[in-house]
Structures are given as C-alpha cells and as structure tokens.
Amino acid sequence: MRGQSQRVPGKNRRPLGGRPLFHHILGTLTAVPDIGTVVVNSDDPGLLDDVQAAFPGIVPQNRPVALSAPDTPMNAVLMDAVARLPDADGLILQTHATSPFLSAGTITAGIAALRAAWPGYDSLMAVTRRQIRLWDDRGRPLNHDPDRLLPTQDLAPVFEENSCLYLFTAETLRTRANRIGARPLLWATPTLDSLDIDDEDDFVLAEALCGHKRRAGPGLAE
Image 1 (cartoon, rainbow, N blue to C red):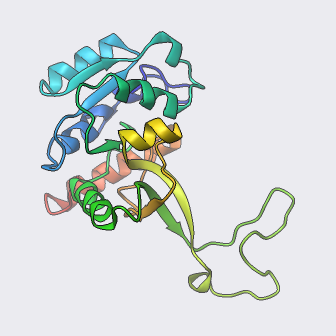
Image 2 (cartoon, one colour):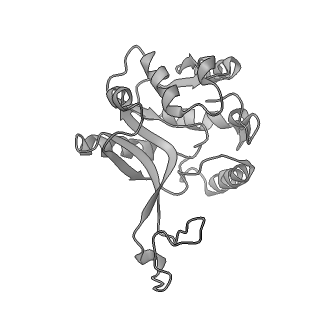
C-alpha cells in the first residue's frame, strides 16, 4: 500500500463513502474466515500507524526504500514481503486498497475454486471476461472479422487481468519470481467487485457505487 499515488494524491487515505479508502478492503479481508493473517506492506510509516489504529489485528510491514519507487515491479515487492514472513505456508492472497468493492463472498469463492482445481492449476488471478471487438494501434482487428459482424455475445471471450485478487504459494513466487504461476486459473470476478480505483474518474464511479449501495440497503454486500 503506497503512501503516495502519482495519479491521485493521497489515494489510499482519501475518503470513500465516509471512510478512508484502505478501510474498505481491510474490513473485508478481516471478515473472511479462510484468511488467517492480514499483512499490510507500505512505504509510509504513518499509513501503517493508521492501519494499526483502525485494525489492531493486522500485521504492519515496512517496505524497504529500495522497493519504494513508483516503477518498482510488484513481484519484487511481494518476493521481499513474503521472504520476511515467519510462516508463509499455504496460499497467499494479494489484493489492493484500490479494490474497495471486492467482496468477502468473491474472495471465499476464489480460494475454494483454486483449492478444488489444485494441482492442475498452481495460482489464480482475477479477470474480467470481455466479449468486445478489439483493435490494435494500427487499426487491425485482434479478435474479430470486420466483414462478418457477429453479435458481440457470439465472440470468443477475452480476459482482462483486473488486479483485484491473486492467489499463489511462496514456492511459486520464489521459483518463478512471479505471483502468476505456470498454470494460472483465470477467475472471472463480478463487474462491481472488480472496480479498481486508478484515477479521478474511477473515484467518481466509486462514490456513485457507494451511494447506490447505501440506497439499496444491507442486502447489497459491500
């Protein structure tokens, strides 16, 4: 969890629906029975203090300065973070504060799906299933024939890595230097769960979704 964001200053602390952004995902993670320990890795000691104040059971982990640059690959951060955990057996789940609507039910279902598919699949990444017409930057069709306009629902699906959920083991991370294993299970997450806050427009959408959830009442999971 970065202390600063290039596109949205102070993003992880910014209020969303009346609470700091990071409160949403941490509240969800602590409510999932299948999750034992929640670790927050950050380059911002003040943010880690805020995390501990709001969620005393969460384990804070300082990110080394050498891994704090905006262009640092997440796999490098994960390798360092996991290497410092005293007990990293079993599945490791990674998510981001910028996925505030990822639900406990979706997380639980993803864990169950990978366990059921193991060892045929060695990791899981959340994806968004798309059936849309894609083009490259030279105006060439990537996944359809413009002379044969099939309805989009008849196109072969493509899958967008949406970054809201990853599951892997410490062994996979060590041997591949990657959170995605050699045989990843593509786990299609619900559209509303998958909203990732990356820029100001995303925050506008997120606030609108929070308002919708409040109006819908407790029957619509956060």
